[in-house]
Structure formats: C-alpha cells, structure tokens
Length: 153
Image 1 (cartoon, rainbow, N blue to C red):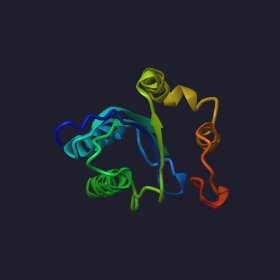
Image 2 (image 1 turned 45 degrees about the horizontal axis):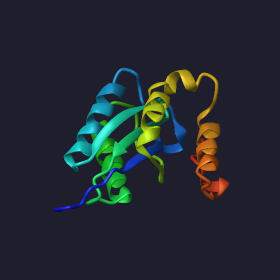
Image 3 (image 1 turned 135 degrees about the vertical axis):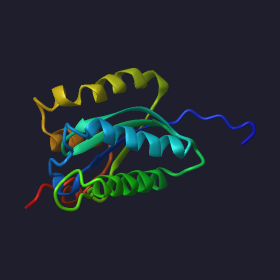
Image 4 (image 1 turned 60 degrees about the vertical axis):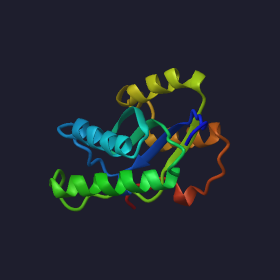
C-alpha cells in the first residue's frame, strides 16, 4: 500500500495441547526455523522465537495486511502438520486452542527480546502459568481462569 507506514510489534505466547512437554531439544531449533519460515512467507518479520518444551514465545513485526488471528492459525496449523508429518513425537501433536498476543512499542523491543532469549533460565525460577498470568495482569487483560493454558487433569 502506497503511503502506509506501520510499526507493529506483537509478542505471541502459545502452548502445546494440555501443556505436555513435547517440544524436544533435538528438534526445537528446526521447529523455530520452520515457524520463522511460515511467518516470513506471510510477509511478517520474526524478531525472536524461543520457548520451553511446553510453550513458545515469539516477537513478530507484523505486516498490517494480515490479522493476528489469521497469522496464528497458519503458524499453529502448519507447524503441527510439520511435526506430525516428520513424526517428531509419539502420538499426534497439536497446539492448545488459543494464544496470547500483546503489543509492544519500539522502545520496549530490546528488553522483550532479552526476556524471550532467556526462557530456559527464566523458567528455572517460575512456572509457565504464573508467567502467563503475570503478562495478562501487566496488560490488564480480563480473563477466565477456566481458559488459561491447562495442564492434563
């Protein structure tokens, strides 16, 4: 679009179905590369992607021509198909329904990248649920506890 200029940084958080620790260190970097390819093919820019065996954080500079929900649909659908087609884990892999998306300004990007880079270190001290609830509180997002990323019951 001529004369359209944007700067849209979105932090995404999404989890493995039932918060199972299925993302193996042996192939997590390949998964991150695959997801980056999905994002960039859709004309967005992956700033960083890291996570834990049960969830992923990304920071994406968004192209305004696609909605957040459409991008996440393609990321989650295509990456789960890739995991299943390559038989990277036993059984059927799927992402949990839903995701978190939070907007950041340019001045906040460097500290958010550092935060995402240090996921493994960070989660030695704090579990994912507490981390996620803190993000929701920080952004003043109303939520229903029944729909926060669930563990197997």
